[in-house]
Length: 148
Image (tube, rainbow, N blue to C red; front, side, top):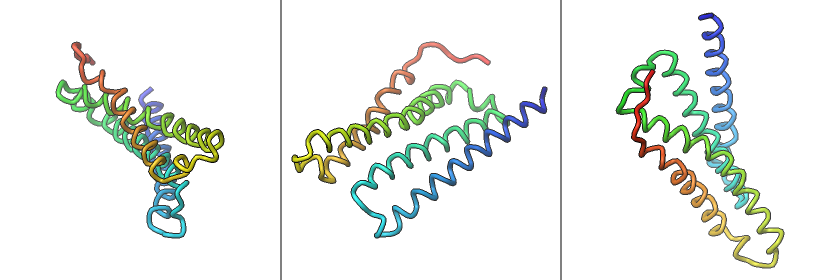
């Protein structure tokens, strides 16, 4: 049975490592090369950052769960672990929702200049990250501890 768990661990770590590399491969050219900097790539960078943060979290989580589970779920880290888990995991659907809302506003309000400006796009991305942070806040205020 331990062999199956170890194989699953390597599969999870490998999968998240591939996702991290692909997100960085997509993110780095947009950030470094000026010819890729278009205002619509703000949402591409946002989705890539959400995927990168979520994958990095789960990579570290599974790694620590395999080798140092007592430290991962210690009383001082428990709330922080669950908060960051909820925050980073919810960012991916929120990022995709922000892209959809932006596209909807571009189609419905095609003649309004505000929805085509970079300020609107940055406001959408900022609101998305703030909503993700606020949604996970109740996990910091638990009254029960986790027992293993």
